[in-house]
Length: 399
Image (cartoon, rainbow, N blue to C red; front, side, top):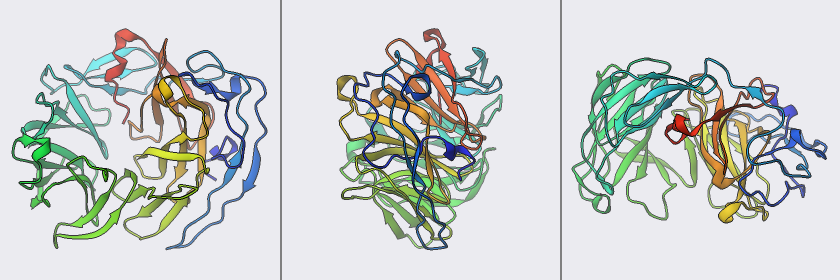
């Protein structure tokens, strides 16, 4: 079982569907009447190396009525010590439960604001480029460890990506040019640690590609030019300059695994390939569901998935209804974050912003902005914090 959380709603199978008419509202099944009965459909079976394991699959009927806009019903309080970084011209730490703010030291003011990239153990931070559709301008790169008060300058680069080692990152430099002209000159990448020390020598990347993630098996590369193949990722060995494997339909990566959903037929399962062992597990989906994005937890044990419901439920502006599911990367067993259903246009962010396995989602409703936090190990009730407009919720970094 997945940390005791499988007693809650688990990936739906069959004909049971949540109600239509989402209209940018989060549905909390515990808060309304007529919650369906949880029915076991199939029990998971273990698999051994090289084989795919079957997930637990349960179904649950949705609530019979809609609550007001926002998360309502039984919720827990946001942990007092839980904090998130907040980007902007003057980045700071923000405690959602307290409304407390503390500046992140070591970052000079920048009128364009900053971009935070999650790396194992913290964030790589760069000033936001002010040139729009371009790449190449060198900007300083800072490292902010989890819960640290001060960011440390690491070096300068065009772009940054997480490395395989905690606190390390790849800094890549490209000649200044428009994004439509990226196939002329390759980038040069250098690995750094969080203190600014160089690790190894520089690596010249294949022309037209950039690093998505460093791994012990090589570098995961993605094409820089936006095409119809934007979700394809290549595992590339910098020592031999050879592609070891290609993954299509990638939804999430980390240093140890790639989650991908290749072109499919009636059902579109997600495959999690372990880069070290070569073992692959499968996360089964309903025939009407499609995974649109995902993110691994800091320790790699869990994979959070944004699942689009393709059975006709839509929100304002035609946005599809979605649910958030959390799967075990080792077994493929998956659970729905308890009782949360939402219109896709209300979900503003999803990630694991700290070193703990607490999944955080940001929801923007017509009349409220709310942060929801859920621990897949402990299970239980979702914690909720209301964010005021003056607290600049658009700048919150959730992962």
